[in-house]
Image (cartoon, rainbow, N blue to C red; front, side, top):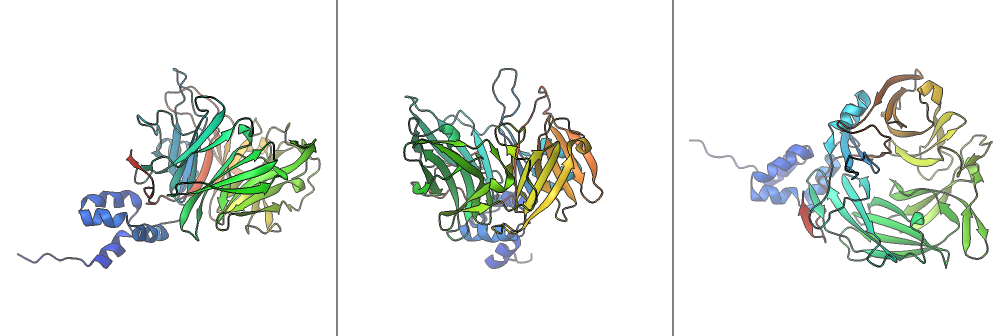
Length: 412
């Protein structure tokens, strides 16, 4: 009988670090030592560095189908980018489903799901028993390992001092501290100060940063890129001492990006120096599709609807307001879209193919070089009535990321 060959630990680490997450998780049952190894911070970081980048996308429908019992059915999925370009509806339907994150202690599913580096940040809020305060807290979920953290520390907003419509959130990764951070912003109506709250995964509290309120933040969810979380903002008109209102008619050049640096926890405004004639001005209150920020190929993008045309601009070098280049300028007639509402979902590495999600659940694969439509599909969940879906998408990769540090752990 031949002797059993025992592999050295460093060789085991080397081999395991190249295995994709899904099969790697199965290796936990080989031995206790392997199970411990796979969840050590050092191995997690090594595995993340060696994982293929931006191969999957997180699809989240915050306002999904309504079932016959009038209870919302949560729908989210992690899909392969390659499969999305071939058949969007099939990729979403058969992707890694993330539905119904709940247990006895958490009867309601999260209201908002934000994806970053393989980790999903789940936002919960309620109005409390007295209906005078809004309670906010988070949980962190890794769909690859099916591990979810306990509640983060809560923070409260008094309804008399804050408007719930003026609360924004963001989720990103700080390379300096090597940790995930959640950012929540709200404007104090009385002081006209923007309060920025920052929470690190594993911490027991929130830090508060006060910022002068010079612009109105237009988007609810910030976009993470280059170690910063970014929101679209516009000028405000001041009436009296305590009241501000959006200027209803602005040009593209008046828009700015409010950028919050996770490393230094500081902010700056980035001008929107898009080299076009932006007249006639757009109306933020009337236009069917006001401008929004997105992420394409790790770059910030600005997209909006103007005069029966869908327009997308790309900031190729983050922070350089001179690096904006026009990516798309397509008529809705050419896209064969009847209602002017589109969202750029993802783009191939060579920028040849762009996937668009349009109103009425339509998916369009547009080929730039030939200026033609490669594919049009409609997606409706099986067994449900047809309805308009308003998804959000975040590109990234499936990862091991530890969510247990400093938080009570649950497995789903």
